[in-house]
Amino acid sequence: MGQSDEKRYQAIVENLNDVVYTTDINAAITYISPNIQRIGGYLPSEVVGRSFADFVHPDDLPGRIDHFQKILTGANEPSEYRMLTKSGTPRWVRTSARTIVTAGKVVGIQGVLVDISDRKATEKALRHSKERYRLLVENARDAIFVIQDKRVVFMNASAIAIVGYSPDDQLADLTFDQFIHPDDRERIVARHLQRLAGAVLNDHASFRIICKDQSVKHVNLNAVLIEWEGKPAVLNFLRDITTEMQQSEKARHSQKLEALGTLAGGIAHNFNNLLMGIQGNASLALIQLDASHPLRTRLEKIMQLVQNGARLTGQLLQYTRGGHHHIKRVDLNQVVSDVSATLAATQKQVCIRLQLAADLPPIEADRQQIEQVLINLLLNAAEAMPDGGDVRIATTCLPDLQAVAPTPLSAKGPCVRLEVADSGPGMSRATLERIFEPFFTTKGLGRGTGLGLSTAFGIIKSHGGHIEVNSAPGHGTCVRFYLPAIAHPEVQATRPASSDPHTFTGTLLLVDDETSILETSAQLLTYSGFTVLKASSGRAALALYQHHHRTIDLVVLDMVMPGMSAKTLLQRMREVHPDVKVLLSSGYGMDEQARALLLQGCVGFLQKPYDFNAMLTTIQRLLPPAG
Image 1 (cartoon, one colour):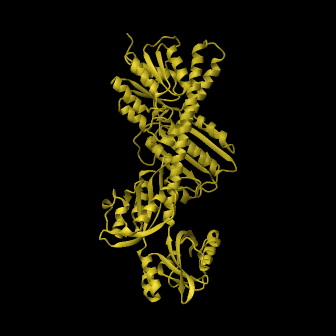
Image 2: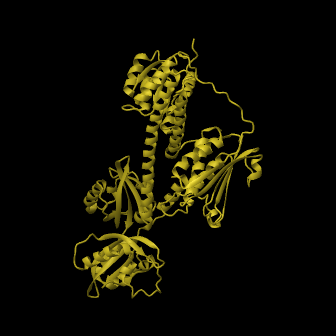
């Protein structure tokens, strides 16, 4: 959730008429919304940290404790009790709560506290005199109405307002089932008839109502059997819980996305480990084959495919774990070719045509983020043409970025333009004006987050560029973005790792629980001249370090290890030798844990699957010169 979303949801919670609260599993209050001051006279700071038992009438405390325990075990029945206000006066309240679950473990409860003093007073007044309760009922915040012989014989002002009518509307001829959503009607009518027949039912029911303007609201109903003018009737208290339902749905959706992110991150990590094993074995084979051997071409193709797979898992990790810009020299034509090939395999109803400019200058960008922009644009185009269509992707070099941007940009000079044009139905002007708004989507409920183009806008802006969209109904959509080009790209010679063994010297402790990675990496490093000690767990690594720390020059440590975390292992090795050098590696990417360990003194980070030449270069940089 972004910061603006968090502030918006916080504002909603703090302005509800009801009180929102959370506790830990010991019933200590960890949060309570400001409305507690209106209901109980307390400031939130006077409540947070104290047990809820401090605010319960002594006669109601045993029942509250029993209800709290039931909630922790998964029950969700609401309860009513007397709350002690700051002045000592009891007020009737009703609470609905559910468990807070983190990492599969119940850590507390969250709920809503509703002041039902009006309702309790109303019930008491009804038992004594119909005339005495009318004033209370008419001014109650809850919607209150009486049903007799299926007809609504009385409605207070709140009841009239909740269904969208005015006091002047003629409601006498309406039956109560006309207000109930068709999908809930049979159930609620049956409950009403059973109650009239004397059946013992749960007092509360949730369902949907149809308002005068045909909008739908979620409501909670509390019903009591009474006599009205000498005949059986049902007194009903109705509360609009639409906002609560929406918040609950958003919370469930957020938890679902978090769970999917965790799952996707785990899959990407495991897949990176597989790619690492494939790449290590291919590297070993390349080292051992003669330069003219016919199988070298196939092995080099395997290495290229591993890198393609690594980029895909990098995109997945970027989504699930976030990250910062990793600015490098990027060939935009190559990005277009790679992404369009991937999308063409999954969106076969779309014909993608490439028009890539020759000698296109490179850009300085985060490749993964530029790929994300292009993927979003292609997916939008494909979804706009479910029955098939054409997408044209073109790249062009232009002489002046300032000339194509509506407002001056910090970057000047030549730029590259990428254009994605589809043959879809196009967009109206009203839609076009809102496409960069976060969460705006035309896909319908549940079919999109509305973050695609707003994310693209943010990425292009953060790279010093400009994005524009042209569209009209019946004429398709064309998205163009412009990014600064590197005017005079330097040609950088690459130095392959030496094919001669024993090029390097030094002793390495290699720590990884994946056998394929551990063995192949150890063989590659040994072939290059290193002395390699191997450990497949944190405990084994610590034992080896305790015995050989005087000769170990560098520890290459996988971040995710069984039995002992990387942080703990680092602390234990420092107890043996404070100046231990640790190079981290992970299939998860640079997450918060890795950044924290780097701040604590680890000397580098290798993203799996890492290129063996890059690994040798990194190790060579970290070790002192031989001799």
